[in-house]
Length: 97
Figure 1 (tube, rainbow, N blue to C red):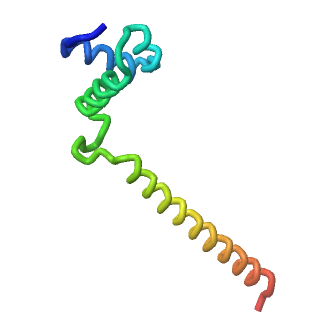
Figure 2 (spheres, rainbow, N blue to C red; figure 1 turned 90 degrees about the horizontal axis):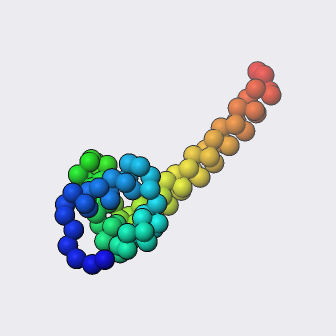
């Protein structure tokens, strides 16, 4: 099936995927639609419905990876600090003045 689709049809397909948890891959196969086309419909639907805080600031996967790496580094640092504090607490509670 190839051609132009009405706005209502696009929104209906996107709603099936977003709100009714239909699997996009299966739906595309059943309706003979290109996954990339349906993906763009879903993205527009999510923006319209407010799933993204600011549609102009959609985060790319590389930005997400950078954020994740920074957060993982911060977690490691906090875990190290926590271990140091645990050891210090053990030392001070073990030797009363």
